Length: 131
Image 1 (cartoon, rainbow, N blue to C red):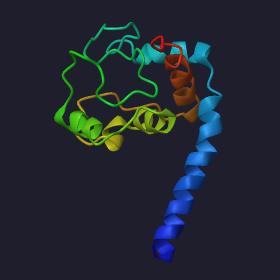
Image 2 (image 1 turned 180 degrees about the horizontal axis):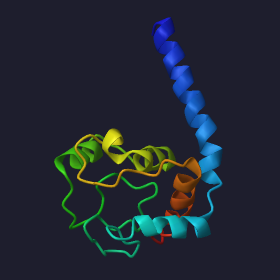
Image 3 (image 1 turned 60 degrees about the vertical axis):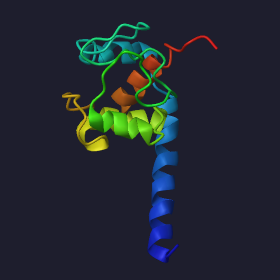
Image 4 (image 1 turned 90 degrees about the vertical axis):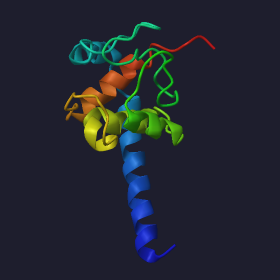
């Protein structure tokens, strides 16, 4: 790996490390309020798909994991590549869905404020399948 590649890797790692504490500290109660922007197309109830898939158990799950939901070709390919909806991936997608997954059918422009994204992720973390 060249010096330039190493530098890019270090910058990416530092950026990811810097964002993680903020994501982990999201406010679920505020996230429920912010999620109202999402509720027209998404539900958090298990098995309840709307225009978008149910977001029940989305955190730390493979992309494209919802049975019976028809994903766009772009999202299906992204999931087949092994992507996981971890906090960093959710943060990037919620910020700019069409930039994160080019060709997604999600029309939502995104949540520009990092604290809103952290809050929505904290809210979604409450909806986990029993292990």
